[in-house]
Length: 295
Image (tube, rainbow, N blue to C red):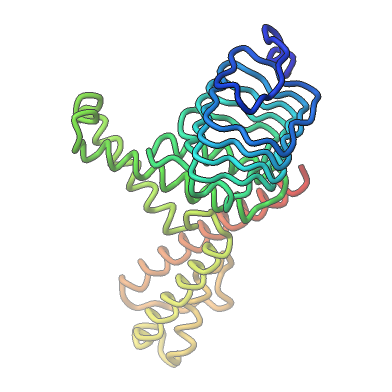
């Protein structure tokens, strides 16, 4: 629903010299090739407008809705956005330069290329996470999985920044707002993120999972190859190593060998568990990628 963003707005035209606009409606027009400097837009709406080749320099937008706006080659320089909504806009070639997007802006059916917004992402951890998760969903929606992964990595970076700040409580703000329970919770979440990052990487890459799967199989090969004398008599080192590597694959090894030594039996259980876990994660990631591609 976008009709609510048109109500209570007075029709207006974009003038180069006007310093501020409040409750203004810019609708169904072309405001192309203009240069707008130092203007403030508050509780206003840009609906079905073309802002192609227009430059906004040192402007402030507060609670402004952009609905169906065309921002191809639009330059946003040193602008500040607070509580703005971008709905079904074309921002694939917007030029964002040193802008502030940190206060609760949202994008719906409006993907923004990562490289065009990267330098304007919030530094504050929780705000960075919120915005990047939104933009990651938008990139996934249009099938741009590379940018979706970059935004996920940026969101994870923001989440880690925030959790570290809560855990350390090095500033008066965090010491007053968060207590011991919050510190413990933040520490546990950081540990969980570290484990997940090790398993599939910050971008949830199936290649990272596959790499880890190969590493587990290699560990299994080395453990069993170096302990081949504790396997049933007549087993060569490479045969024992192959047995250990295949243990990381979620099928039973082609031949069950008799193991002499508790540590090899423990290793066998660990390798099979890790192999099953990584196989399940890899299958889930591939299924999610295929599902997103059909949406």
